Every structure is written in C-alpha cells, then in structure tokens.
Amino acid sequence: MRVVSARLQAVGVVILLAGAVYSGQQPSIGAPSSEGAPSSDDEHRIVGQFDEAFACYVNVTVDGAVFRMLVDTGSDDLAFNRSHLRKLGMNAKRLSYDQLVNTSNGIVRSAPIVVHELRIGGFILHDVKATVDYAGIDEPLLGMSVIKYMHLEIGRDGCELRW
Image (cartoon, rainbow, N blue to C red; front, side, top):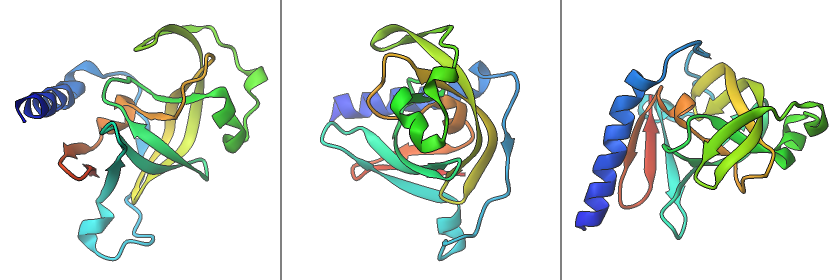
C-alpha cells in the first residue's frame, strides 16, 4: 500500500508542476460539449479503465477517429505511431521524421503533426501539437500537453479526468 501511495503522490507532484514546466503556444480550448452527457457532473469528467498492469486508458476522438489512449503523465505530447495515421487520414510517408524525442525506450525519431480537434468526453481542444513516432509505439499516448488542462485522479478502480 505504501508503494501505491508513493506512486500516486509522485503523479500528483508531476501534475502540479506541469503548469510551471509547460509554456509556449497553447491549443485553443473549445466550449464543453453537452452531447450525450446525462448530467452536468458527467459533462465535465471521463472515467478511464485500468489494464492488468494498472495503466489507465480513456477513449479519445481525434479528428473524428476514436482511439483508446494511454493516459501517460511521463509523456510530454500527444503521440501516435505511423499506423495510427491511417485512422487520421494522414500519409506517414509525407511526414518529416526529423525530431529526436527522448522516450522510456530511448531516443527515437518523430515527426510533428497538428490535431485539429481532440475530444475527451465533453472536453474539446483545437489545434493540438502531436508527434508521430517513427519506430512505432504500441498505443497512442495522451501526454501532458493535454492532461495539463485537466485534473487527473487515480483510484483503485481506474482514473478520472475532470475539467
């Protein structure tokens, strides 16, 4: 229990510091959508589910395509691999993989892209910078460039993002 508590405290510290660390051009935040939300409390939150390794996943709509994304406080960006681009209607061969990104798997080449609309429940962001990993991460990552606009809470049954 102490190990879990220490990890949760560390995540909280990362989230609190995120506002001080991230600066620069910001994506625009759209008005919360009431589409499909049964109550005002549910309009401003989404509950993610843990996998067997206690990684938390949420469903995110990116430019009209639905992705199951890993909520990753260790990732700076919204990140995809080349195969995810098919769902987004982008051609991976037209991108320039000229950025070096330090990941948990080492330094990888990536290409910058811009996501025009990102929806998490009723929360909407426009013109979000993202990266495409040339080597191919397994699942798309919901990184701090998006999480910083929300409150992340992790509990026994999953995670919750609120805005």
